[in-house]
Image 1 (tube, rainbow, N blue to C red):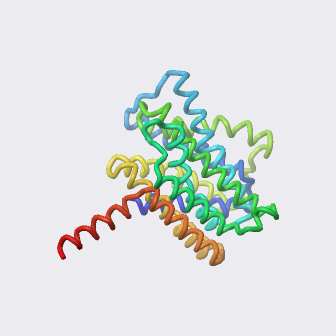
Image 2 (tube, helix red, strand yellow):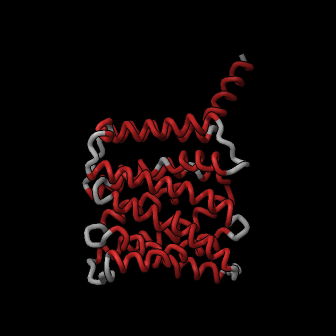
Image 3 (cartoon, rainbow, N blue to C red):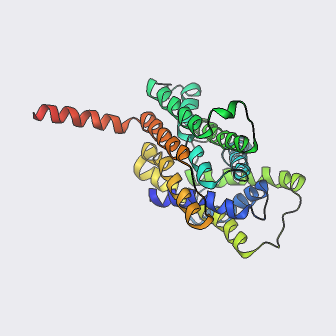
Length: 297
């Protein structure tokens, strides 16, 4: 299930890359949440999940839709107009480390520990390696695009904190539906104002990509997300962060003729190490194993 989630989320970068040939970034965001909304709504109804009536709850969904969908999707899709989908997915992999730091600062029950600080520092080091020192002196579109993707990752981090503070008492699938509803409400006027009326005369490949990013990378992804969360817990679910880039890179290489340089792959390795430090379990197991081996000797 974790691999399936990584595949459909990794596929979102591929679907967006195809859709960007004919559709602007913010309109892709609207398509992604608009078409996912009835799918999630049908699932909520079929499962008999009660729909909240409180305006306070729906206000929280509106904010959640902005932080977890509207802002990051739009930033990442715009970033993909300048950089490859594989690189975007690698930079998006910093989400877990941003999330750990933001939660450590804002939430009392998730303190900012040394391993979170070290993990975040490694994540920044990996990003710096990817972008190169020239980012400080040469703000070309590619650099701005990478910063946009990082901005999306930071928005995801704030969304996770917001969800824990404001929506922890709601059923998870209802949260997914409410969040997508909130982001749809936000994106409709924004798209019509800035992009104009969405075109319908799109090629079959682009329509297929829009359907894929909505039905697979959004609706199905949330079903897998909450199923894994219930079975394996949040810590194991975080592992998907490391599994997304290989799928996104593989799809880009196979179908879009994208090629990533050595810097990107080394940077991903450093980011992965930062994730491992933030998560902590890998090193704890290695320490326990070394102690067990020592005791046996």
